[in-house]
Length: 77
Ligand SMILES: [Zn+2]
Image (cartoon, rainbow, N blue to C red; front, side, top):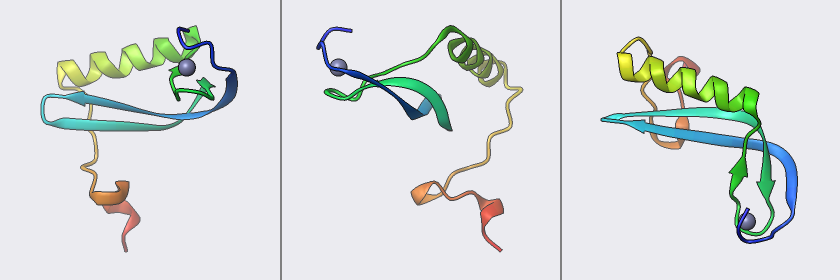
Protein backbone atom coordinates (compact mmCIF):
# COMPACT_ATOMS: atom_id res chain seq x y z
CA UNK A 1 0.00 0.00 0.00
CA UNK A 2 2.20 2.71 -1.30
CA UNK A 3 -0.09 5.41 -2.59
CA UNK A 4 -2.18 5.74 0.60
CA UNK A 5 -5.41 5.58 -1.36
CA UNK A 6 -8.54 4.28 0.30
CA UNK A 7 -9.21 0.57 0.05
CA UNK A 8 -12.68 -0.49 -0.88
CA UNK A 9 -14.17 -3.95 -0.98
CA UNK A 10 -15.07 -5.03 -4.46
CA UNK A 11 -14.73 -7.59 -7.17
CA UNK A 12 -11.62 -7.66 -9.26
CA UNK A 13 -10.59 -9.31 -12.47
CA UNK A 14 -7.38 -11.25 -12.33
CA UNK A 15 -5.47 -11.76 -15.55
CA UNK A 16 -2.69 -14.30 -15.73
CA UNK A 17 -0.53 -14.64 -18.79
CA UNK A 18 1.41 -17.84 -19.19
CA UNK A 19 3.33 -18.22 -22.42
CA UNK A 20 0.67 -17.80 -25.09
CA UNK A 21 -2.27 -18.42 -22.80
CA UNK A 22 -4.22 -15.68 -21.13
CA UNK A 23 -6.46 -16.68 -18.29
CA UNK A 24 -9.00 -14.28 -16.89
CA UNK A 25 -10.56 -15.00 -13.53
CA UNK A 26 -13.52 -12.80 -12.96
CA UNK A 27 -15.24 -11.58 -9.81
CA UNK A 28 -12.46 -12.20 -7.32
CA UNK A 29 -13.20 -10.63 -3.95
CA UNK A 30 -10.53 -8.05 -3.28
CA UNK A 31 -9.70 -4.79 -1.60
CA UNK A 32 -9.27 -2.26 -4.34
CA UNK A 33 -7.46 1.04 -4.01
CA UNK A 34 -9.76 3.85 -5.04
CA UNK A 35 -6.80 5.95 -6.09
CA UNK A 36 -4.62 3.72 -8.25
CA UNK A 37 -6.81 0.68 -8.80
CA UNK A 38 -4.35 -1.76 -7.26
CA UNK A 39 -6.12 -4.84 -5.89
CA UNK A 40 -5.15 -6.63 -2.71
CA UNK A 41 -6.30 -10.19 -2.11
CA UNK A 42 -6.69 -12.02 1.14
CA UNK A 43 -4.83 -15.25 1.91
CA UNK A 44 -7.63 -17.50 0.76
CA UNK A 45 -7.83 -15.85 -2.64
CA UNK A 46 -4.03 -15.75 -2.97
CA UNK A 47 -4.01 -19.46 -2.27
CA UNK A 48 -6.48 -20.14 -5.03
CA UNK A 49 -4.54 -18.01 -7.46
CA UNK A 50 -1.39 -19.97 -6.66
CA UNK A 51 -3.20 -23.20 -7.44
CA UNK A 52 -4.46 -21.83 -10.73
CA UNK A 53 -0.91 -20.77 -11.63
CA UNK A 54 0.43 -24.22 -10.76
CA UNK A 55 -2.17 -25.88 -12.94
CA UNK A 56 -1.42 -23.61 -15.85
CA UNK A 57 2.31 -24.18 -15.50
CA UNK A 58 1.95 -27.95 -15.37
CA UNK A 59 -0.33 -27.95 -18.38
CA UNK A 60 -3.29 -29.34 -16.49
CA UNK A 61 -5.45 -26.31 -16.89
CA UNK A 62 -7.89 -26.28 -19.74
CA UNK A 63 -8.69 -22.70 -20.54
CA UNK A 64 -11.25 -21.67 -23.05
CA UNK A 65 -9.81 -19.42 -25.68
CA UNK A 66 -11.16 -15.93 -25.28
CA UNK A 67 -12.32 -13.88 -28.19
CA UNK A 68 -12.35 -10.09 -28.19
CA UNK A 69 -14.51 -8.74 -25.41
CA UNK A 70 -13.91 -11.85 -23.36
CA UNK A 71 -16.68 -13.84 -24.90
CA UNK A 72 -16.43 -17.53 -24.43
CA UNK A 73 -17.16 -19.79 -27.34
CA UNK A 74 -19.74 -21.53 -25.17
CA UNK A 75 -21.59 -18.24 -24.74
CA UNK A 76 -22.43 -18.12 -28.42
CA UNK A 77 -25.29 -20.18 -29.71
ZN1 LIG B 1 -3.28 2.87 -4.50
